Structures are given as C-alpha cells and as structure tokens.
Amino acid sequence: MSLTDFERSFKNPTNRIFKLDRMHFLLKELGNPQNETPAIHIAGTKGKGSTASMIESILNHSGYTTGLFTSPHLNKFTERIRISNQPISDNQFASLVDKIWPKLKSVESNTSLGSVTTFEMLTAMAFLHFKEMNVDFQIVEVGMGGRLDSTNVLNPITSVITRISLDHTETLGNTISAIAEEKAGIIKPNVPAIFAPQVADAEKVFTNKAKLLNAPLTSVKEKFSWKITDRNSLKQNFEINGELSSYSIETNLLGDHQVDNAATSIATAETLSKVGVLIKPTSIIHSFQQINLKGRFQFIESNKIKFILDGAHNPDSIRRLVRSFKKYFNPKKVILVFGCIHGHDYKKMLISLSKINPVVIISKSRHPKSIEPLDILKQFDSFHLDSLQPTVSDAIGKALTLATNEDIILVTGSFSIVGETLEKLEGIKPEIY
Image (tube, rainbow, N blue to C red):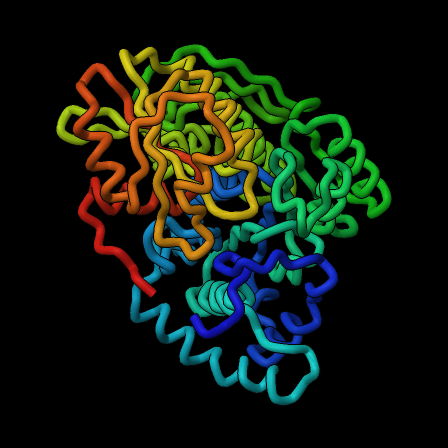
C-alpha cells in the first residue's frame, strides 16, 4: 500500500503520465511471464468484469484451467487474481509480493522510469501467478482505458471491447470517440477483435482501427441476435443466435445488460472455436447456469428482507440499472442506500434513481475518495431523504428498520458501498488498510 494507487488517490491522472515502458521493464526482470499463456484481453466502460467472468466460466466448463485478473475487488485484494474462479490464497498473494518486490526496486533504482504503481504491481503478480500455475488461458480485464493501461503489454489471441460510455473523462477524454480511441488501443495487428453493441461513434472508431490493423472483426450487434424469453427475481432465460450455433440460456444474472454481455462472451467463445479451441455449445449453456457474480444487479434476501446490490457508478450504468429494476420488481417501497466516490457524476446518477421514487439514505464507504454525505445532499433535492449515515453498516442498519418484506433495499453508487454491504449482510471480516 506504499505504492501510488490511482484508484484510491484524489489526483486525477492524465494520459500524459502513463507509459508502458516501466511495465515492460518490470516484466522483463520477471522473465516476461505475460507471454507464456494464451490471453483474452478485455476493455470497455461497462460490463467488462461480467464479460470476463462469463468467458472464464465458458472455458472452465469446457475443461480448461483459467487465470482471471479483474478490478476492483469487493472485499479482499485476493479476489482480483483467480484460478478457475477461485481467489488466490493470502499466502500465495504474499509470496508473489515477496518475489516481485526486489524486481520492483530494481526498476526504481536502475531506470529513470519512476516508481511502480499498485495496479502495475498487481498486474505483474497476476501474470507471474498464471505462468507458475500453468493455466491454459488467462482472461485479463483492463484497469482503465486500454492503450496505456498496464495490462496492454499482452499479445492476446483475441481482444474484446464491451460497451462504451462516458467515465473517467479527466483521464480518457470527454467524448465517446475520445474514450473509444483509448479502448481501441488493445486491438492488435491480425488478432481477432470482438466488440459489444455500441453507439455509432464508438462503433466507427473500433471498425476503423480493426481495418487499419487487419484485425478480423466481429460486431456482436451485426452478427448475433437475441431475445429474452422469461424473467423473474431469481433468474432470466434468453435465446442467443450466434454464427456457429444457437443457445438457450438460463442464468441467475439479471438485467438486459447481462444479455448483451452474454452475447459478447459467446461471440468470444465462437471466435476461439474458429482457431481450434474445443468449446461445445452445451458447455456454453451449462456455464451460464453455474456463474455467480456479486455486486452486479445481485438479488439477495436477508431475514426475509430483499436487497438489490449493484456497483453501478456512472450515469449510463445507473440508467440501465433503473430500467432493469422496473422490469423485474414492483415493490411497495424502494429504500435506496447510496454513496459514491469522487470523479463520478453523482448528480445525474441520483436524478435517474429518483424515477423509482425511493426513500434515500446517503452514506459513505471507507474508500478514501468517498464523497461526504452532506456534500451529496447539497447538490439536489429531487427525492425523499430519510437520513445521512456515517458508515455503510449504519446505513444498512437504518434501511432494515424501514423495510418490510414487501419492500426492496437498493444499494448502489460504487463497488465500495456494495462491498461493505456484503460485509454487513454476510459477516465478512473487513480488510482494513
């Protein structure tokens, strides 16, 4: 935690300070472990974590051992590095730090490249662990952007870009086209690229970049079709027609956005099949029956009180959350527990959330960039405020006093708010730094 961590820092970095030279040097010191394992590289604004987990599940159910690197974590740092969907142990995590730390110091002392960041360290740890565990595939989620992200040292077998929207505008740009240009940086010459349904400006950027690099391109919106056939508060069913097969999917992942992500992950699986990776349609179907993602439109019950937990943290994600909520639920009352971190447009987020007429409890997580509840309150008056609560635990406790079994407690605004809610509801020991 002594390293520079932009996730937890109030400094809004610009792309000018990001370079891949330092990451290349560190990985060279480690023997370039990132090159030892076939990689699927995933960028995007929304859905990249879900899509990465879906791809991993498909490969697992096809008999392959996988390494998965994602961010952020909900409760423990070890969640970011997984082997066949199981987080690495505390001992494995500590061992990786021990192995890499001397190399990190070598970078700092022998070059003018500056200090290795927390995310660069974690990325190197993932690559080294996947090599040491001899996994069949590594599925690697970009941290932020793409072009200059520390994961963009990979030579992947396929590149995937999920839906683009405005986020991290201080770093990536304030237009869809500018952000798409950064995400398109993971597209490599002659390497198949898949992109999820996009707005026109983003689609144009990805299409042009793929043509420029002679990268075989799959537009999921053009090549696939899908429809939802059934849904309730516990699961949804949908049909996806791909290029190689059709799939009748049943999953506990709720929301229209997860159908988009599912189509993108299946498009990736079919692309892998075309280059010789053995993936049966039945394995794809079974993989969705088993997958479980926390904090992504997650429905849970605690003492007969219903909760929806969703880490949506930008206006577009919140709009999609509200649309999905209305389709799945019609509670007597919605109790909203909301908090977010600096750098996100919480005013627009709450304007969208006001459409479900919630009773609102504003709180803050332990994340150092959490916005004070009083500062959020000052920005708008478009909802029924119940209270300001100093901690997430207090906020959930208050929400439980207001809720009946006919109501729903909706927790959203950041992954840190959701993570601390899970601590409260599931008795998870907090990881305090």
